Length: 242
Image (tube, rainbow, N blue to C red; front, side):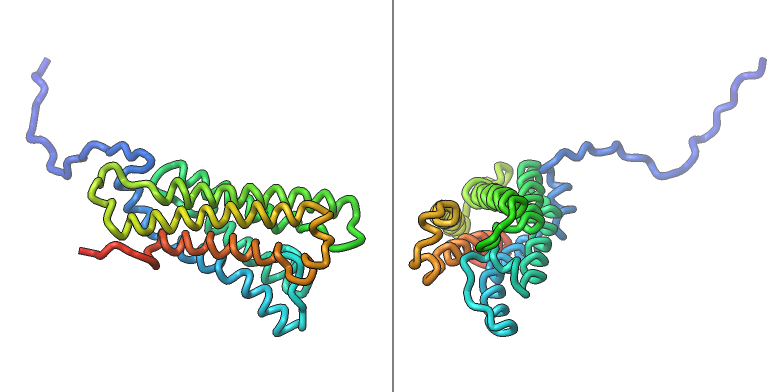
């Protein structure tokens, strides 16, 4: 039996061991850079929604200010209202944060935004039993939507990367205070607006139909939501790039 010949090893590129990329790692953060602008899109959509509903309805359809933003579903502004919610839902659903909890919260909020559009609010007067049931779902989705956004603003956005202890800059401290203010404003707005919306005695008062407090509290919550997200994108008190 002839001995086995051994020749020089074949030249070629050596394979480096595969890296285990875990959620929240530097590689994931770098690959997710294209998603960062989603914060800006989400924020500006939220800020513009109450103004688009009112100005668009008034300018193009001579529509008076309604009881709530959701009530525009039953007007000629329905397409804009539903389209904005689906856009916000899509962006939130596509959002990828630094950690898995950011991603899951974004997916949940996105589904809630779409749920708000699928199940419209109860129409004013003569609602069927199905419309009343849809209105309950609408209220639940809206409540869960803003609770998740409050969680983003007060808890997730205010976190500091433990791998970068120097990231707690003066600008970051200011942003954290603004996130907290936005979260509190959203909480107050949905609590007061939701109370007026859900209690028939308050919703039927002449004051409510004259000054539309539910609409303005919803607008306040939307604007606070939007401000927190554009701040996270760097529009407000951004750190200086070295």
